[in-house]
Amino acid sequence: MTPSYLNLKKGKLQKRVEKLFKILKNCEICPRKCHVNRLKGEKGYCQLGYLPMVSAFHPHFGEETPLVGRYGSGTIFMTSCNLSCVYCQNYEISQLRIGEEVSFERLAEMMIELQNLGCHNINFVTPTPQVPQIVKSLEIAIKMGLKIPLVYNTNAYDSVKTLKLLDGIFDIYMPDAKYSDDKIATKYSSAPNYFEIIKKTIKEMHRQVGDLVISEEGIAVRGLIVRHLVLPNNLAGSEKIFEFISKEISKNTFINIMDQYWPAYKAHQYPELSRRISEEEFQEAIKLTKKFGLKRIYT
Image 1 (cartoon, rainbow, N blue to C red):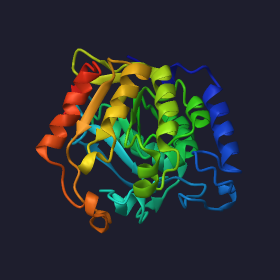
Image 2 (image 1 turned 180 degrees about the vertical axis):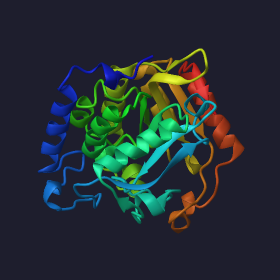
Image 3 (image 1 turned 90 degrees about the vertical axis):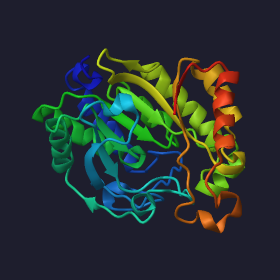
């Protein structure tokens, strides 16, 4: 299957780039709406400016099997994040912002290098604050011969307005569904109105790409993958999340129920987060997916 971005009419991608960079002048790329002029070096919550910032890139074999295949998912870890999760396992990248500012051409070269290594897709981790930079670099990468699907690997704290400008560019959306309680989301991730926001963004993602399609070779080519990290003491509010996916997205949604929570970064400052989850907590989450008739559960 040809990646969607190769089917865009001539000039359409350039128009999307122009619209996205216009948003950066008074930044509303994500729901935080910091209203800083990133084109002039002003920085908001994400502390990012005009150029792309990357922490690492390499074939990744720890992602979901349909993304990894035989040769890996071509993962590009974008520096920074628009959330501040107290238990973030990648806090050096997301909150300490360890990374390097690169040119648009260099980001495009990274995509090509990963493709040349045989990766099945280009997987942008935490793309939200850097969507304009990614799309501008994609335009260059296409001219270099990029021809594999793009994965939007996000915390889902996105702007629907921004996502609509990605319609026909990304083939695979992979949002987190972290919490169903906004107070908890604010306490642990500084994410006001989180559940209402992600319900809108996941709906838009599904509208664009539909349920996950996997090739005969077992490789994801298009569609939605939702990730849900089970937290101790039911802090994630799993039941409401699965109910939302079942009733408002699709019972055929591919959902990865993740059990790898551990108290990283600042989690030990919160007694309720200072332990790993139990097997009982994980199995209870699995039971809840069955309660709502969800059919494609990955663990």
